[in-house]
Image: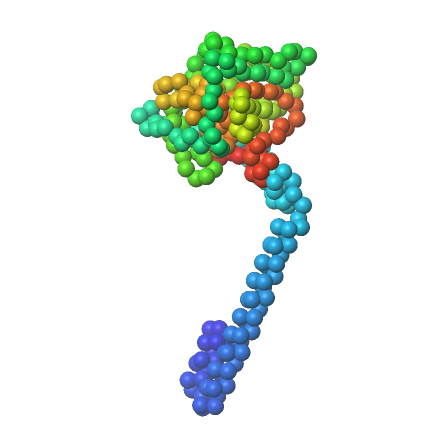
Length: 268
């Protein structure tokens, strides 16, 4: 039984004067509680305002929050990621068309002129310029997996193309490579420049595809033609569309949404 209940019980057995005194005490306690609650709320709001105004930032996020994101990434990558863990796959009949979801205007792409630049091959090797015909020479793979957007929506999609692990066998990264950077830089659409950074281990996952087809037909421009990344154990922000460049790297590359304050790892 709390203090208020005890006073109320005592008041039922007491004189009118005692009842009035008990009620006055309850009112004083209520006012005091309200005052302390107000002070605590004000202090909390003031602290948040000061934090947002004065705390230093790193890549779009306050440094304390960035450190938390970095810790979460380390835990996810080192403790939970397994190349043998596969995202759920669905029957082909469950596939649907996802949203366009370009950041701005859907670019116009000259598919005949498209080339994939591959760099970071090491030992002074020159960059390669690959065509779709080069990719078609590699083993084909197909899967029906869920594309999950960080905005909260998801769509089951059937994809086909080249597994990155097979791409890396043909175009091997040099020893010491730990990361992969991918760039989408549509000609004449500078506002649509987009880039992601990935761990090489994530790219070598058996479900990571360089996709050329969606739901049985070649990719359309609004869905990333002629080549996009499908990496179902990552949020959609990592599933870059219209890839124009792939680079192997020893150091962690930058990432578009990481620079806006999001998690670099972006794993599910």
